[in-house]
Length: 240
Image 1 (cartoon, rainbow, N blue to C red):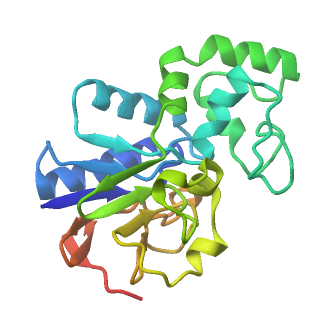
Image 2 (image 1 turned 135 degrees about the horizontal axis):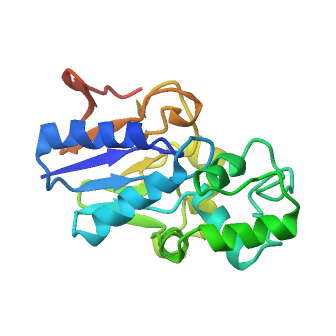
């Protein structure tokens, strides 16, 4: 039994296709692949990423995509344009915060991000396919596999999985990252960008910083072992 997993994508379609190819080379075209979320924002082709994953799902590919905090922004702007995500520490709206990457996402849909808010909203509603917005809004918050629990940011220690709050699942950092608790299954997550994917005794962080020009991580998880997939094949990840 094996599970493949891919880190935060952030609009990097070419990197996503290359990561998929490394997985196909290792496990074949029907490999089960879990994606930890953050499909959109910052990178150049959020539209392409959403379309690629949506087409794969519609074609029956065994691809799981969990919801990242960034995946909430675009559908929320379309449906609730004044909503501000409580996880954004500055309290700024998605389209106003310079670091969240809204402008790159909007441009990928052919929308000028610099126009007045009312015009921006109308253009976004006209340009984003409803299927894309529905796909992002309906992504599951977690995926439990016999080998791992896949979730975007992590889980709050001591809380049953069924009782976890969505804001924690897509935003949590310190309480989860600093915990040495045995969570049961290996928790596979992203959200907190590192220089490279890192395996800990109780979790695996796959956010290698593709949003910032670093590689997009793809791994294969098997009982008792995790390997990073490279262009030269498998490279074992040792626990930190």
